[in-house]
Amino acid sequence: MLVIITIYKGLKKFTKKLDKHFLIVSSIILLISVLHLLFLRSLTAFWGNAIRLQGIFLLWHLIVFSLVSSGFKFDKIPKFFPLMSTIAILIFALVLNRDLNNRAVGTLGEPNSLAAMAIFIWPFLYTLKFSRKMREIFAKTSALLFVIIIILLSNSRSGFVALSIQLIFLANITLFKMSYVKASIISIFFLGTSLILPFLAKATALENRAEIWQIAVKAGFDKPIFGYGFGNLETAISDFSQSFNYNNVRYQYVDSSHNFILDWWLQAGVIGLLVIFYLTLKSVSNFALFKENRNLLAFLGVITVLSFNPASVVSLIHFWWLIGQGFARHQRSD
Image (cartoon, rainbow, N blue to C red; front, side, top):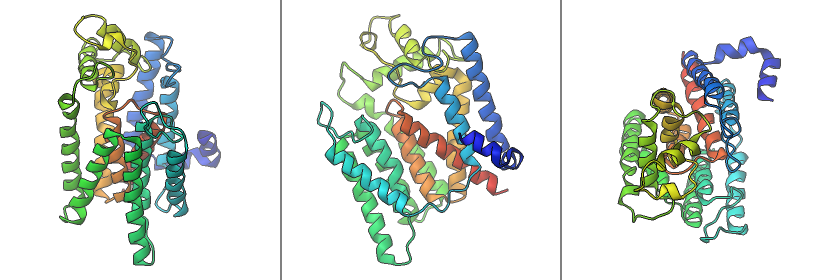
């Protein structure tokens, strides 16, 4: 629908707004996905599995959504949007049933996804500008209270790590008066350091992130150039874990590596790694260079959450929208 509307409004005018590098990288992803569909076809390649439906079909939508949204300016979002969103998320988290571990899930169906939603939304409320100083202070305080309550209700460790990364960035630019670039580099450093946490946590037989990550890294080296194909994550992890007998993953149904970088490594090999690293780091760089506080805060949080959990469709929409905005901001500076 977005594509149809864009074409109707004027495709030539729209394509002039697109960042050429972003368009090239997006074309590479689309080309690889078509090759995967032709030569690495499986039951899950196009639609994904019945649980997540995160196959090539969704990938195409996300890429096109990112491209289309990059052509629009979202500087002035009505104030009631983030306000109503935070109120709704909080109410549903408190009212709706919890999961078997008594963790709030809200309307997202999964506690880490609920925390990821809050991590994305609260910067929009925090960065609102008001004519009266007291209203602005109230908005900032409310935003912080909201995300802390949601993380406590969902008991999401990845949400806590993501919020910590965001607060480190905020402290560096507000208290220590660092440049956005320096503050971003420090935040990315702490994000990288936090990836050691699953290896320090008490080992569990089920859904052990450290073990799944190790399987994913090793499995990727079996097909390091083009990967196993988009939509074939569960096949890659299952097949490789069955090849040796000193892991618990082979006894489980695991359809994600619990890390978005490793997902791209498994599905698209070195090419996938280069693409996702470029898109992520370039977006962070552009947000930092143009001092996009709101988008940079949200993006740091989203990539942190995606570094520890299977990607939900909601988080993927957040991720690709922010990627589009990162390149849109760069394009508008020319």
